[in-house]
Every structure is written in structure tokens, then in C-alpha cells.
Image (cartoon, rainbow, N blue to C red):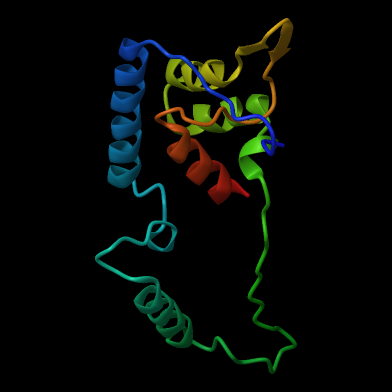
Length: 148
């Protein structure tokens, strides 16, 4: 979609500061409430190979995980999501965000994505997908990906 055009958004500095504060607050609250599991947020302190090793070790230590005598089975699912940020439905996102944050914050976050984009004499109202470059877009993407 952005092969020829590169979007450039102009935002007021006060809005950027507000959004950055909101991003820090959302990640802090998510960490305090244990919203995201440990495998969602690997960090420099735990490189991916160690994370995979711990996950496999945890699966192998489950009781009767490989027992298939009653016809049950163990399934590991892998999925591939492409261009998720362009396909996020803002109405669904608003409803999902209301489950974890105040409804005013959820409406603010979705309203920041529901904007009019202007290019020369053309106007487009973005009602589907998140805008690149918002300070709290990483939280939205991680939360929506967890729901998927």
C-alpha cells in the first residue's frame, strides 16, 4: 500500500507528549495487571532462544501432556498474520479496549486513528486500521495481536 506514497502526519507537540504519557501508562498498567504473558514480550535480558527453551521445558513438564490413551492429542498451532495494523477494525478495537481501560481512554485511542487524511484535493476518513506513528500504537498492536 505504501510503495509509492509515504504518509507524513503533522501532530501538535502537546498531543505527542500526551500520547507518550498514555503509552507509558498503558504499558505500566499492563505490566501491573499481568495483561500480557511472558512470551509476548521477550527482552534483551531474555533472548529468544532462551525463551523457546523455557517454553519447551514448561510444556514437557506438564502432567500427562503426551498421554494419548483416551484419544486426546497435543496440538501446537502456528499462524501468520500479515499487515495486521492495516486491518484492525476500530469499532471492535474500541470494544476490546473498554474491557481493560476506562471508556474515555478507549474512545480517545480509537478517535486518534479515526481521522481525516488530506492529500492535495483528496480527503479520506480513516475508519479501518491504525495510523502509523502514534505513540501508543505499539500497545494497541500488541493487545490486538494477543486477542487474535
